[in-house]
Amino acid sequence: MYPLCLPRALTRILVPDLHLRQVSRTMKETGKQLPRVYVTRRIPPDGMAILKRSGLCAIEQWDSDDPVPRSELLKKVVGVQALYCLLTEKIDEEVLKAAGPSLKVVSTMSVGYDHLSLDELKKRGIRVGYTPDVLTEAVAELTVALLLATSRRLIEAVDEAKNGGWGTWKPLWMCGYGLTQSTVGILGLGRIGAAIAERLKPFGVKRFLYTDVAPRAELAAKIPAEFVSLDELAKQSDFIAVCCALTPETQGICGKNLFSKMKNSAVFINTSRGGVVNQDDLYQALVKGQIAAAGLDVTVPEPLPTNHPLFTLKNCIILPHIASATLETRNAMAALAADNLLAGLKGEAMPKEVPL
Ligand SMILES: NC(=O)c1ccc[n+]([C@@H]2O[C@H](COP(=O)([O-])OP(=O)(O)OC[C@H]3O[C@@H](n4cnc5c(N)ncnc54)[C@H](O)[C@@H]3O)[C@@H](O)[C@H]2O)c1
Image 1 (cartoon, rainbow, N blue to C red):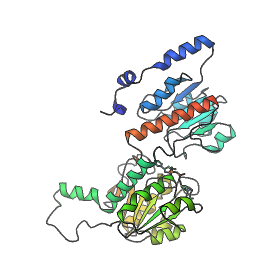
Image 2: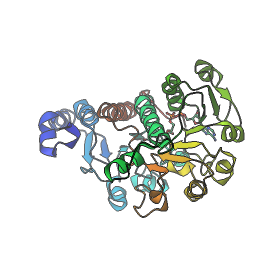
Image 3: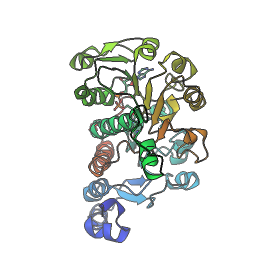
Image 4: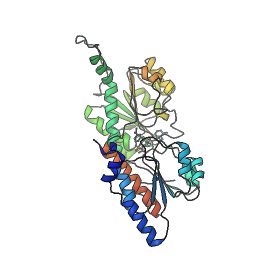
């Protein structure tokens, strides 16, 4: 069994609770209160072990696998110096006001920070940590897996085999789309986009195209990938992988306009954030055959209600936001978020800080 699934009592045995001893010793020695930290979820053991071992903070935690209710979060942040959060918590003006002027550090266990109101954080001089790089490989790997599952119709084929749809071998049955000699378009050539391209190269891709806010010459040269407009990316790509950050500019960027320009045989993959896709437009594009298929790891909302129309489509595969879900990666994310938080508390440079 994975340690992440261990009952709380057992986790406590595996991760010695040095913290409490250290807290009481330090408090006795100095007569001072340690900075208070609120952790908004039960997190992978490596992250909690780092926080506890440091002896630098008094930790309070929402000790559950489910998100902390908003009302509880608003109560618990009052007077804390640091907040360790996940992408499920919207850290906005309301939370920051509730926390008050003591709050100095927000550390999110994610590379995406669209759930954080950066303007509000900046205004208050609160430093922000995030977790780039440590999840790049896992997310790129899952994106390739989702692309192959979608383009080669794996889920549909498994269902047919199980449910009696598998008749004789038929030349045109279950045909999908191959990567050999294809053109792959990357929307947002950042860390993850580049890692996806590297993983797709051995499949015999003929051309890589990308679009971004500006050409990323150095990164693109290594692939190599050509910089094009979003329109050209749509028109020329056989596969589109969306890897950009969710920002006001990318909100709904994959909508009617994009899908109408794509090839009827094109496969669309999104592992960035659900908000970059207009899901109604995607549904229409899939139903009308404007594009061949879609694979999504992220949706709006999450979880996507089981009666959502996209779930009725055979040419749409939806995963429950698992792109970074390997045990090693989640532990590395938790550890980096803890290191960021502690560095912030100490007033030192964070290993990975969001420039505000
Ligand atoms: N599904 C998951 O579990 C999962 C896991 C990790 C990351 N993500 C998402 O993936 C995103 C990318 O992560 P990364 O580490 O590669 O980040 P990154 O910052 O290295 O790359 C993001 C890229 O998007 C580009 N971009 C921003 N605005 C754009 C626009 N308007 N048009 C085109 N490109 C634009 C940026 O310039 C950058 O090159 C994260 O922001 C996060 O939302 C999802």
